[in-house]
Each structure stands twice: as structure tokens, then as C-alpha cells.
Image 1 (spheres, rainbow, N blue to C red):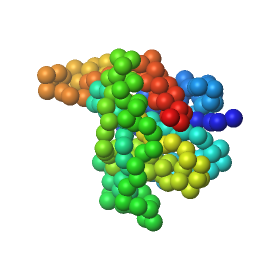
Image 2 (tube, one colour; image 1 turned 45 degrees about the vertical axis):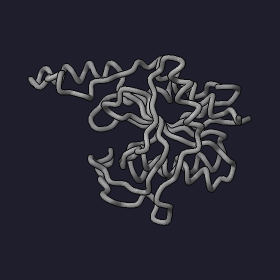
Image 3 (tube, rainbow, N blue to C red; image 1 turned 90 degrees about the vertical axis):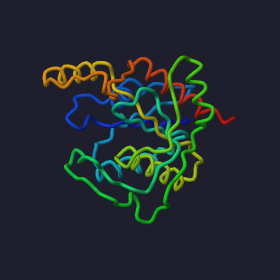
Image 4 (cartoon, rainbow, N blue to C red; image 1 turned 135 degrees about the vertical axis):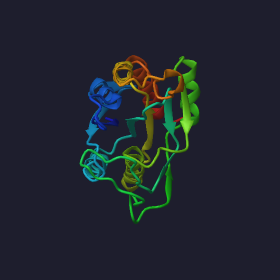
Length: 219
């Protein structure tokens, strides 16, 4: 039976939640368009996240591979279009490692393009009332590295799997906690902040489900 591999990340940066982890918990073991969803929670570790991801793609040979991650401050669903062969972390990962100007894959290309039907997905999300946009930079943290590695693993598998990455906003409860922290610290300054956007989990689940459904459509 065709299979979807859906990955997310553990919490990081002192946060107690990661919306991508909540997406994995909700969709793991479900079926979308008759296709089983295999959820995988990746560690926020440049080294430790690589092998489980690449092994899962090689072993299960999924039809679609979609990774999800948090982009703090992003107000909409954001579909990435490219991953670059560069790891330059602004903050350490959960192992305390902070690669700077390193290659994700020393033998790999400069960049890899996603293979999801992004041009079809974005208008479909907007038609459902879900705010969404495309992006040509997945950053240089672990989200980018994961996308670059997943695309490479799909190429090596040779199955023609569609592969891409979706960045998610904060969950509302995360912003509520952030507002409490800022208020307690006397640093609220709401009119100056641009990182207080959030999206409810139900809308994120609807968005990811739509992304997966359209990615399974060969047309």
C-alpha cells in the first residue's frame, strides 16, 4: 500500500511545544486519500536527525515525504521551494551543537528543489480560507538540513517520491505564554512586535491534510 512519510520535530529553544510534533501525533497511523501516514518525530539535532530520516525513506519507500517545522513569527502556512547545502545555526540544537557555515552534505549539490506540486497547493489552501504562501528560503537551521537530506534520500531511492517542507506558525497557547513572559518582564511593546502570530491546530491539520492529498494526486 502506498505510504506517506510525515516528519516533525521535538520542542527546542526552551519551548515546551512544537506544532509540528502535534501534527505528527494527530496524523500518525491515519489514512489520507487511501494512503497510510507514517509519522516520525525527529530530534532537534544536526547529527542525530539524519540517519533515522534517511533510513525511513530507504526502507519504506514512501510515495510522498513531507516534513514540518516551526518558524517562530510566521503568520501563515509556508511551503518551501528549495533547500540549500548549508548549515549555519543562529542557536545551538538540542545537543548543544552549533554548526557555522558547514555543508549539510559535503558531496551534495549547492541546492535541491522540492518536488511537491506547490503551485497547485497554495491556491487550494487559500480557497479553503487557510492563509498560505511560498518561500524560497528554509533558513539554515535544521528545517533546511532536513529538507535537503530528505530530497537527497528520495533521489537515491529512485521511486519518484514527491518531497517538500511546510513551516508552521506558533500555536495560540504558545503565543499566550509568550505574552505572559513579555508582560512579566515589562517588554510587551505589542506595536513593535512581529512574532506574535499564531494558528489553531485544527487549521494546521486541515492545511497539512490538503498538502498531502494534493501531493498524492499524480495529475
